[in-house]
Length: 193
Image 1: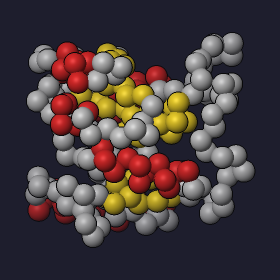
Image 2: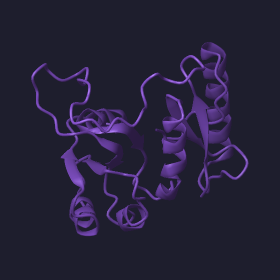
Image 3: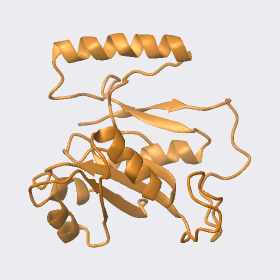
Image 4: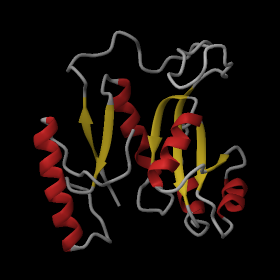
């Protein structure tokens, strides 16, 4: 499946700072206490929430591009071999137990643990291609604050979206675009950077 990013800039101008800082002293994380020591930041952190995805992890992890410096698997208490398979495929994966319930909590858990200058989030179910991550990072490196994948632009698609789900997504999308003066094409797709 191919998706194409939707782009967002906060003020239309490029940031003064280059977004890929490689300094050994990263700026403090807003949710860490002063004095906490963190290792040198990596360019890209990939946050992958997972719940019973042992069958899909090999396909997803084998496609992760070289620009990803760390992979965080946030496990939602899987009852299958998700964590074991992930560490066999990618020994350097950081497996983090989810500290609450739901995908939103899993993402927050991963974001707080991420050390990269850029964070990419994607599902572990194989519905998103890790090969597209460099495209997302390209836009982040060129001044965009947020890049969101879309199933509803030319070249995009989905094998499992029903007519009802498409209608619901379209209605929510229209509301969000109007409220925030945005131009998103897909609200409910979780491939973002």
